[in-house]
Image (cartoon, rainbow, N blue to C red; front, side):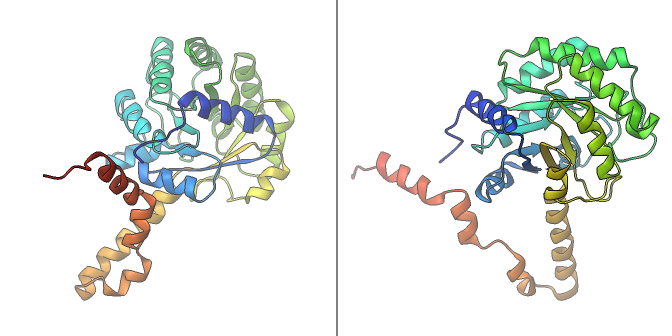
Length: 297
């Protein structure tokens, strides 16, 4: 009932232990707290919180318009709804190195298990769009050093995302990944890899966990979990997939209303009320009410 009974510290320890196994962890993107609970119910390993989704939820493009306060607030709502560890997209850290340090502590306090910070120029762009720009290596390393120095829980995962593949090519991405690891990054997110061979090349270059982004309509082919495991990936995210599925269903539902004036034909596509009540543990709230208000007048 209400929120997760597992502490953020325990979730962070769970994530570290799972990564230490070397197996591939599956983190679908949650677009709200209820979808995070569904991800847990379906047996996944963790929850991903996408900056693109948080922006889209506000009706905004993913170009750095969201604030730390908005991201931390929504991430807290999502992370506390599940026993799974939640990894959040912290864009470029919301400012200079001191801002990055504050970002880490705010997201620690929000109950996240970890974050990733990227090396794009601010304002950033979606990682699978053309026209990205990246900062120089020293600036990228300063962001990661600030993040690592600021964390208070050593299990809080500081992941470095590099977007340089789309700007300067694979060898530049490998060189930057190595430098980011030397700066203290616990894990690397090589964005917009185009082939399994590129993922494998990054895997051969660094010995920290690696994340693969399987976003639809992007630069990467949609590889399977097994394909990614075979080249040594340790986490895979589907950042916007659930939002896209939900919005696609919403479009079709509204079209049905326009065309037929009723949603009778869409009932089979809907989550039933009983399934929703089960997911939110409606009965648990009823039991709590009964145990507290057990008097008669």
